[in-house]
Image (cartoon, rainbow, N blue to C red; front, side, top):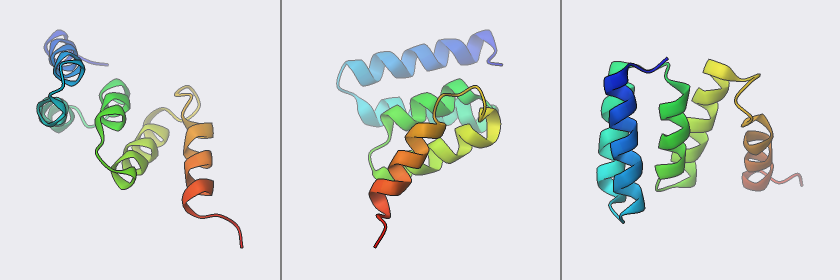
Length: 88
């Protein structure tokens, strides 16, 4: 659960991303995750702000570890793995 301060930081990160400042958004969300590495909401946004597929996969894996049953990202994770590692 995010504290009010963390929630405000997440909102700031979202605003930065929406105003074409993705590096700032990633920096802000990273600061939230440093203080609360089990914040599934922050990991969801970190995934959204990720610059690479590898970063997205790390975020999805972390979300699944924290809140796998309720996150809704399980099917996204499986689809991404299948896309990145197609069957022969």
